[in-house]
Image (tube, rainbow, N blue to C red; front, side):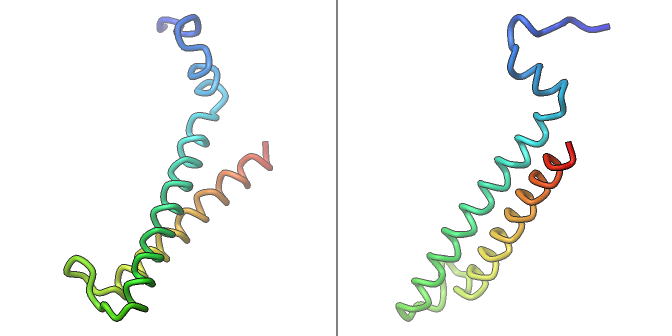
Length: 88
Protein backbone atom coordinates (compact mmCIF):
# COMPACT_ATOMS: atom_id res chain seq x y z
CA UNK A 1 0.00 0.00 0.00
CA UNK A 2 2.17 2.80 1.29
CA UNK A 3 5.75 3.28 2.13
CA UNK A 4 6.80 2.29 5.63
CA UNK A 5 8.19 5.31 7.51
CA UNK A 6 9.43 3.39 10.53
CA UNK A 7 13.17 3.80 9.88
CA UNK A 8 12.90 7.58 9.53
CA UNK A 9 10.38 8.39 12.25
CA UNK A 10 10.10 5.43 14.62
CA UNK A 11 8.41 7.23 17.51
CA UNK A 12 5.77 9.04 15.50
CA UNK A 13 4.79 6.01 13.44
CA UNK A 14 4.64 3.74 16.49
CA UNK A 15 2.40 6.24 18.26
CA UNK A 16 0.17 6.70 15.22
CA UNK A 17 -0.26 2.95 14.81
CA UNK A 18 -1.26 2.54 18.44
CA UNK A 19 -3.67 5.49 18.39
CA UNK A 20 -1.61 7.41 20.95
CA UNK A 21 -0.91 10.36 18.64
CA UNK A 22 -4.46 11.69 18.94
CA UNK A 23 -4.45 11.23 22.70
CA UNK A 24 -1.17 13.11 22.97
CA UNK A 25 -2.54 15.94 20.81
CA UNK A 26 -5.69 16.21 22.95
CA UNK A 27 -3.52 16.16 26.07
CA UNK A 28 -1.34 19.01 24.79
CA UNK A 29 -4.39 21.03 23.73
CA UNK A 30 -5.88 20.47 27.20
CA UNK A 31 -2.72 21.70 28.90
CA UNK A 32 -2.54 24.74 26.59
CA UNK A 33 -6.19 25.64 27.11
CA UNK A 34 -5.81 25.32 30.87
CA UNK A 35 -2.69 27.47 30.95
CA UNK A 36 -4.22 30.18 28.75
CA UNK A 37 -7.39 30.07 30.86
CA UNK A 38 -5.47 30.49 34.10
CA UNK A 39 -3.49 33.42 32.70
CA UNK A 40 -6.61 35.13 31.28
CA UNK A 41 -8.56 34.68 34.50
CA UNK A 42 -5.64 35.91 36.61
CA UNK A 43 -5.10 38.99 34.46
CA UNK A 44 -8.80 39.80 34.49
CA UNK A 45 -9.04 39.26 38.24
CA UNK A 46 -6.04 41.46 38.95
CA UNK A 47 -7.36 44.16 36.62
CA UNK A 48 -10.76 44.03 38.25
CA UNK A 49 -9.29 44.26 41.76
CA UNK A 50 -7.17 47.23 40.73
CA UNK A 51 -10.26 49.14 39.57
CA UNK A 52 -10.04 48.62 35.81
CA UNK A 53 -13.26 47.45 34.26
CA UNK A 54 -12.01 47.12 30.68
CA UNK A 55 -9.08 45.22 29.13
CA UNK A 56 -8.22 45.95 25.51
CA UNK A 57 -11.74 47.18 24.80
CA UNK A 58 -13.42 44.20 26.47
CA UNK A 59 -15.04 43.99 29.84
CA UNK A 60 -12.86 42.47 32.52
CA UNK A 61 -15.74 40.24 33.57
CA UNK A 62 -15.98 38.87 30.01
CA UNK A 63 -12.27 38.06 30.01
CA UNK A 64 -12.68 36.37 33.39
CA UNK A 65 -15.59 34.28 32.08
CA UNK A 66 -13.63 33.35 28.96
CA UNK A 67 -10.64 32.31 31.04
CA UNK A 68 -12.85 30.18 33.25
CA UNK A 69 -14.42 28.55 30.18
CA UNK A 70 -10.98 27.78 28.72
CA UNK A 71 -9.87 26.28 32.01
CA UNK A 72 -12.98 24.08 32.17
CA UNK A 73 -12.56 22.95 28.54
CA UNK A 74 -8.93 22.06 29.23
CA UNK A 75 -10.02 20.01 32.24
CA UNK A 76 -12.56 18.13 30.12
CA UNK A 77 -9.90 17.42 27.47
CA UNK A 78 -7.55 15.98 30.10
CA UNK A 79 -10.40 13.99 31.63
CA UNK A 80 -11.12 12.52 28.19
CA UNK A 81 -7.49 11.42 27.89
CA UNK A 82 -7.49 9.89 31.37
CA UNK A 83 -10.70 7.96 30.78
CA UNK A 84 -9.48 6.70 27.44
CA UNK A 85 -6.22 5.48 28.97
CA UNK A 86 -8.10 3.75 31.80
CA UNK A 87 -10.15 1.75 29.28
CA UNK A 88 -7.09 0.59 27.37
